[in-house]
Amino acid sequence: MSGRRKPAGREFWPAMAFLLPNMLGFLAFTAGPVLTSLGLSFTSWDLLTPSRWVGWSNFVNLLGFHATPQGWEANDPAFWKYLGNTFFLLLSLPVNMAGALGLALLLNRKLRFVHGYRLVFFLPSILSGVAIFTLWKFIYQPDYGLMNALLAKIGIQGPAWLTMPHMAKPALMLMGSWMTVGGTSMILYLAALQNVPAELLEAARIDGAGRWAQFRHVTWPSLAPVTFFIFTMGLIHGLQGGFDAAYVMTNGGPSGATTTLGYYLYLKAYTFFEMGYAAAIAWTMFLLVLGLTLLNWKRSERGLA
Amino acid sequence: MKRSSWKWAWHLPLVLASVTFLLPLAFMIATALAEPGEALKPVESISAMVVPRTWRWENFIEVWRIVPFLRYYVNSLVVAGAITVGQVFTSACAAYAFSRLQWPGRDRLFLAYLATMMVPGAVTMIPNFVVMRMLPEWLDQLLPFVQWGEPRFLGLREGAPMVGRLVGLDSYFTLIVPGMFSAYGTFLLRQFMLGLPREIDEAAKIDGCGYWRLFSGIILPLSLPGLATLTIFTFMGAWSSLLWPLVTTNSDALRTLPLGLQAFQGQYGTEWHLMMAAALLMLLPIVVIFLIGQKYFVQGLTVGSVKG
Image (tube, rainbow over all chains, first blue to last red; front, side, top):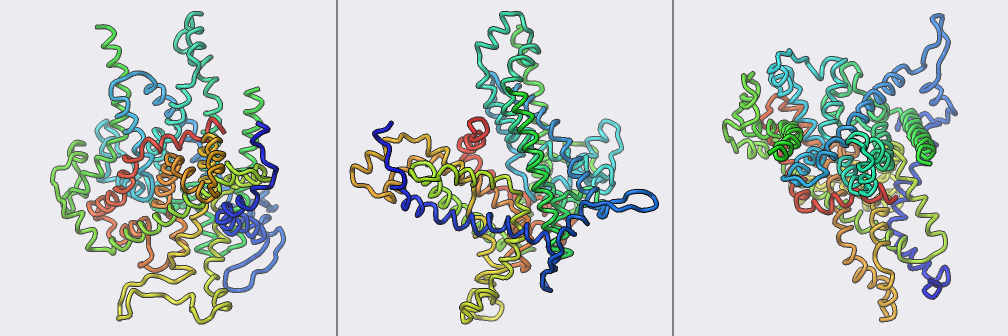
């Protein structure tokens, strides 16, 4: 151990040379912009006229409330609506995780065609993107789409999924489930299931634990780190996400029902050219992600200890 | 007897799930092969919707004729390809420095890298967009004679195809360069290189091997599975990227496939047979790459989740 130790710093310059390309990009496209956008969020700027320092007013306009004769009212009701949309879409996360775990449990045994099943389940998740959103827009067409044809089979008159305000979000969530249930989280659960200690399961069986008790007291606790990881990543992605699907399928509508925070930011920055305000939205999103992740972290640490 | 029937019961939910996952894709393929207008007719049976009744391969050819689909396709291949090569290279170099060289502050700097993986893309997007938009103006002040913001054409004749600007909006530079660096890629390859035996470096150094030879001749070849994983992930991400090309291109000539498909939808919104054919053509490279590199793909997914 001590024999191979080199004096610290002897490899400093070679290391810097190897780091240089990545470091330049990191400074130019990540570190620099993070600080710049923080600065921007305190300005008002439409790209054409010089930017103006406005202090906290972007954040006050975004997050603040003012008194009216009817009571307190948000300065930017649209923000709260879109924040609500973002969280509403996140409600499918636990459902998708349960589905992923269910499929992983089904696949976690010696079985014929197991590779075939895994491939089929995984396929939708790699095919995501505009092509798949276009497909689902077609599937949700009320008169000739696949979804309503299926519903008609069981005697249900299907709705106009993407043009009714209260159906558009569930439609996007259903599509999201199709894309993610057999994807990364299922693969992660499968890998983790192989690491569940067999002796523990055996011991539980000898003690007379049934299938459910084995799962509840042995398998589920040993999956906790993976569950935590999937949940946190899902939260981070979900809070930032929703733009691509809504842009292709609904344009954020009907009447803003599928506009998420990410979409709102796009609207402010690239259709209204309110760069400072958009930067304030971005930073609010960042702090939200950070806060929820840390909270989650703390809770899980307590739970695991 | 009892045992085998129980086994079949186990297959039942799996088959059901498989059908659910495959049905939309079957619908897509059947529509892409349908006659014009066929997709707009209400159909009585589900099987008529998901099993091709006609095999109209011309749909796939027509797509290339009615929009500059070839241009979109080439743009996407060039952009996603260049991003992938760039990102794998810069990540591999940085991962080498972070995993196999000893220098003060190494692990602290790596932690800082990791922390930036939490920053939403939305935070960096606006400043990056602004800088890319201003870049031609700034560079013109430095080196005016280059005319950084002028559109360039392939050949001099009238109506020659545009190859975009050198920098700025509507340029390959803007589409490619910001995507060439990744903290995630560095992380992935660092984890991989940490797993290679330390003795390799010692032996190579005794043989008088320089750092670059050691890196390119020994470490990189040994890291091939890790590099393959990153290559697949990066290419797939770049191939389906929508937002950045959307905000940094205006001209049709610089559009990538996701934008092209979206424009196609705007013009031929009800020609679903063509839309589905175009969408399938867009998915083709992804499926091919996935089938070739399936093993590496799954390997990459599990890195960093459990081991941390």
